[in-house]
Length: 166
Image 1: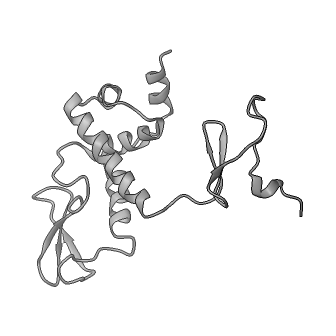
Image 2: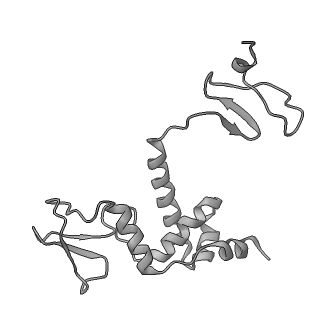
Image 3: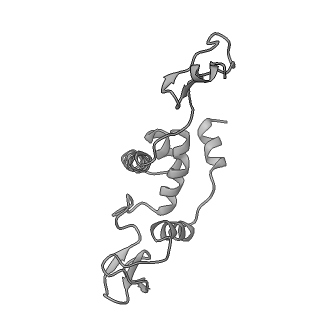
């Protein structure tokens, strides 16, 4: 069995309605808010697509994907959510295109948009604590690589700061 088949078997199945609900909750965690007036009441406009809303107060129309990396996409939300799930494996655009059954160009664009969104999210949240990088530890307390028995695999390395007696 190939790696791509194993990845697909482990991936959860999504339906379009569940994806829309999840996106709605992510975009408006406290319920719908009009981007113009901030009003909480809205109509769903089904004649122009399932993801279009109109504010009851000011009649401003807004899309569920407006202002997100999904804005203007014609790719179903199910494929975006599947791609987001697959991003945790560090997937290439070529493999992504095969797994979610889109063209390479679409998979490349999805991959880059998701990576950009993750980058923007992570820029505001610096890493804290001790980091393990390729088997070694970097101590956050003193900002230097730790020392120890580098030639013994699996042996914990310690920071000089914590090697000093009491």
